[in-house]
Amino acid sequence: MGIGVGVKATGRKAPESKKRLVKLGVDVPMLLVLITLLIFGTLMVYSASWDFSLAIYDSATFIFERQLLWIGIGVLLAVGAAFFDYHRWKRLAVPAMLVTILGLAAVLIASEIRLGAARSLFEGSYQPSELAKIVVIIYLAVWLHSKREHLHDVSFGLIPLAGILGFVGGLIFLQPDLSAVLTVIALGGLLFFLAGGDLKQIVVLLVVAAVVGWLVVSVSPTGQIRVASYLDGIRDPTEASYHVRRSLEAFVKGGWFGVGIGKADTKLTGLPVPPTDSIYAVIGEETGVFGALGVVFLYGALLWRGLKIAHRAPDLLGALLAGGLSIWIVLEAFINMAVMVGLAPFAGNALPLVSAGGSSMVVSMLAMGIILNVSRLASTAEEEAPSHRSPVLDFRNRRTAYYAKTIPTPTVTPTPDPERTRKKPMVSRPGLFQRKRRERSHAEGSEGA
Image (tube, rainbow, N blue to C red; front, side, top):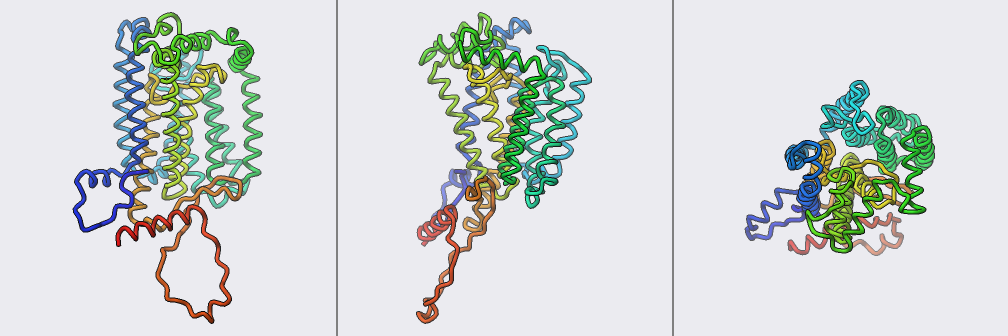
């Protein structure tokens, strides 16, 4: 729960530390998770990159130094985004989408081939497909918020959504980057679901997404190879791809507690790209099963706090941004970790906030800044009107939508006349979140008294 909520005047001067925390106003558990991932990721990048960096760049610290630079840029962006009112993204969503489309087109024109695909610019320093993921979330959150009253209409809901996702996904597919295409489509469907899209349209969207995914894999040689290799590995781990076999070898060597930070040898004997895609395998070898599970726990905590922030958001736009960005970061993380242990086809997703790489680190930090901004504004709104509005997840219509429901402030009324209370008017029963908010308001009133 964010700091700065429910502070009441009691006649005593509040300590200076509490005043500072109240002014901070962000979700402190989320901030601690972010700091932990950054510190741990920096340590693991240094451990996993020195040999790889020496072989590629003739410097054992080149990748580590670049990572520190990207983290510094990311921190500046996150701080700026945390104090940048997320409602201003309404004006920036369209220009950001245009810049992203131009970047994706520039990749195809430049044709800078790296590792068999044209996905980056400036010698691999910038991948527009990474930027496309966060921009799609922002753009769709703004668009769905503006069309929230008409989402049940196919012409305003499903068809425009499919057009947006199809155009951006098509540009990414031409690189090709299959995992990014599927990620963008999944995020679009998820946001449509969270915004309260019609259930029938959601079912149609799922069917279409499944068909498109099957077609993409069928017409892509890379997709066919990855799926075939994954199925072989499921039947017999020794028949999995070379990348997965070396990753599993690292986990086996690490055991329960690991061999120690910096002491892994799989990264020195052929584990592909240990500081980027394979960094989770290095974590498994050096910190063991418990260390690897600790990373899973951190991403689980990030998802929990992100959804909590979305639940407390002042409006639908904030809920979509916080929920969509949190789910995106955790989805990327779990895809990476699942690939490294052979539970998913090879995807090439980085481990957000941990893996070496500028594009992934910068956009992930920007996303975290936006989430923290939603948290700040939610705390401010709760301080100003603690019992006025409550974002509620509505499961009663078998769909998830964020609604701001007005909760009347309890008032003291005179004792009614018995003759006038024989026929009691029917009143609606308050929802679960309404009752909890009302009870909390009464409790705060009692403490203040």
